[in-house]
Length: 359
Ligand SMILES: Cc1cc2nc3c(=O)[nH]c(=O)nc-3n(C[C@H](O)[C@H](O)[C@H](O)COP(=O)(O)OP(=O)(O)OC[C@H]3O[C@@H](n4cnc5c(N)ncnc54)[C@H](O)[C@@H]3O)c2cc1C
Image (cartoon, rainbow, N blue to C red):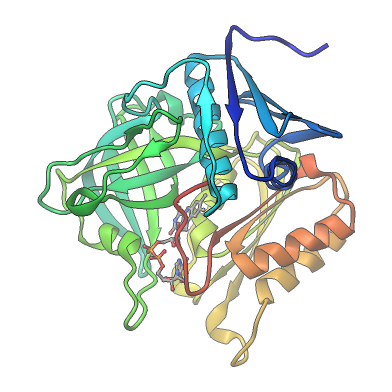
């Protein structure tokens, strides 16, 4: 029997091709939620709540059922953002049974830079003070970092009536990038975020540059935490590049004593290696990109696949890296029918066009 929560909301979506949209919803959310599909009815279940989406009379009837008001707003926004995204340029509308007020987002935290320091030559740590760090303890690790334009009073996002987020634009446009909370300092009420410095000739890297240039007192906001919790398993394989190193470091720092962990981490060279304190048993292999043959591709993915073959089926496989590598490992795990509940595979950046606003 499924649990019914107190916080519920109904909506109706009007896509041009509802059947196709229902397919897209199922294909996409399988990465983020348990998806149960039965002909014209899909149910998406996640820790934030349940979304039932039914195709009827050329419309999608949506029913959300969540454990709190906060999670209800998050699920509503996620559904609205995704459905508009799937609709692309085609006509689309969505209406909710209760009006959406233009409030600030409940999971947005205004924070202030207290310090910034280099951890290694290319990893810059920014520490921010946060009035309430409790939402960041355990659970989900990721946030969207919102940086206002320099010298301007920040204008923060609010809800639109359709449930999507209205982002400030023009002179108030925010820089939005996905990052990981590397550590939570409960006593000092501080959060640490490690920004990989990946300077590229003739290409702007605003996220990395923010970390390089920020000063104590600078204001920013964090949206989250969300997507991608600390894995729980007695045996883990962790694979990633510099963008995932903060997450890997946090996972190993917070595992239960005795957890058996193998980590494969790709960095430029030995100067980018970091100590990874843990109460688990950690075997870490650093791959140095500087030693790869010229034009080498997919080295991290190849090492990950070999380690997956060598590890048992009960191993939790956690992978985050560049898009191509992540996709290749995901397909490999799928072919091997690795239990979906025992894996997390995400791309954290993309060659050429790198940033991630939605998600
Ligand atoms: C859930 C999640 C968590 C993340 N956590 C972290 C984190 O804790 N620390 C961290 O450093 N990154 C993290 N990332 C990755 C980070 O969001 C991207 O690297 C982002 O693109 C950086 O923004 P930017 O403005 O510096 O560069 P962008 O404007 O996005 O891209 C500019 C150029 O840089 C290239 N580029 C982007 N990222 C990289 C990279 N990592 N290596 C080499 N080239 C790159 C792009 O291909 C593009 O050509 C995370 C991503 C996700 C999705």
